[in-house]
Each structure stands twice: as structure tokens, then as C-alpha cells.
Length: 163
Image (cartoon, rainbow, N blue to C red; front, side, top):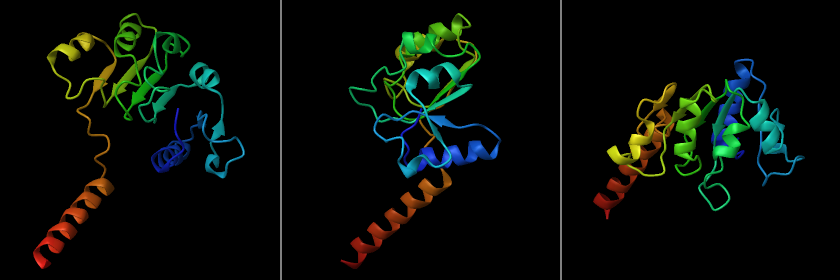
């Protein structure tokens, strides 16, 4: 499930290189938009029902808050893996934990949470949940992003020193 921005496009290219068929759902991009490239556009229902891995790439908005709620999670394959590195709040965390505990979902990887930083109380929903990997909101720390931040800092320091 992706917005077809630069990040979604790069990830789709990598996945296709591994022999994966890539499908995506984005209600804001028309089916004939060149952004789709080799990615097949499907509706959300088709995506949920047919995907082995769902990588979520959405902003947090009224339309995407709890986008993957208990009902959506039930429509996913029991062997599917959900990855959310986009925004906390787009996945109903307690429903996700319940689906994993009951074996209705194959696994999940979360890098973002409804409550950040993830403290002991909000994290309790994930206690003893199998097949789950939690990371501390670092998925965006790519080599490119770290270099870009470092360049920006150096430029600002140089400007301040020169001025």
C-alpha cells in the first residue's frame, strides 16, 4: 500500500528486482498516471486480500488514521507480513497485536507508533506478541538521508560563520 512518491518507487524497484510482483493502491493517483510504471494499480480490497507483504507508505490524515484497523487486518492473508515505516496511527496497534496473538497474521514490523517515543505503557500492547519486530523510528535513516542532513548542517554553519 503506497503513495507513489520517491520512496515507494525505490522500494518497488528493489522488490521487483527480487522477482516480486508489485501491486499498490493509491486513491489519489489515476490508473493511467506514468508514476505507476511497472507497478500494477489495484483497489485496497484486492491489495489486502492478495498480498504476501504489505509495506505501508501513507501520511497520517483523517483518511489514513487506523487505515489498517481490525476489519482490514481480517481481510489480509493469515500468512501476510505487515510493514509500517510511514506514520504511527495508520495501523490500529491493539488490533494488530490481537491478530498476531491469534495467528491471523503472519508477522509485522513497526518502526512508527501512535505514541512516540514508545514508552512502557503504550508498548504493553505488544508484550508477548509473536512474529513482531519493533524498531525505534529509524527506518528513514538511510545513507542518503544522513548525508543530506550532514550537508545541510555544514552549509548552515558555513553561512553563519561567513555572515
